[in-house]
Amino acid sequence: MPITEERMEAILANAELVVRELAHASGQDFDYGAASVAWVEGFIERQRSEFPDNAVGLVGVLGCYLGEAIITAVPGADWSEDENGALVVLFANGDSAYPFNKVEKQIVEGLQNGESILSFYNVCVGYVAAGKLSEVDQEGAP
Picture 1 (cartoon, helix red, strand yellow):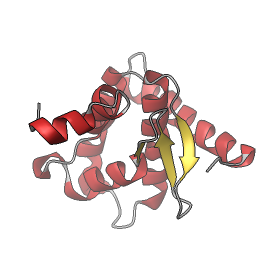
Picture 2 (tube, helix red, strand yellow):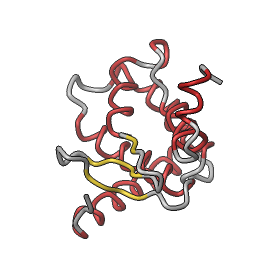
Picture 3 (cartoon, one colour):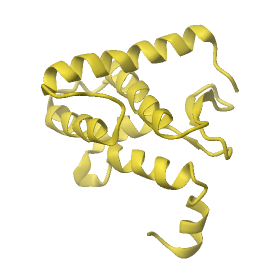
């Protein structure tokens, strides 16, 4: 389901906030590419113990960034809402990804428990968007 122009403006503003602020914090060029997603993953891990139990605001801002990173890497991908009104990245093949859920999982569970936004990004870009996920399901993990 398409999202409103107002909601889209908020998503883009949040994603740009991450790029601007983390470029300053990291001291490096920062964008929507895999290297920057990797830096955000490390940022989450370095800060996990400092996050409040309910880090909804941070999940929202970083989720916008992660979604925009995926959309930037995948032609035809865009923001949408699922049947429950949750924001998703919708791919041209009809598959979707939930970047906010993944950010929250990494914040709560961490890399040591297998929650990685970089891995999520790579799977979305390399498998889900390309329609290869069903091939992996049939053949086993790559």
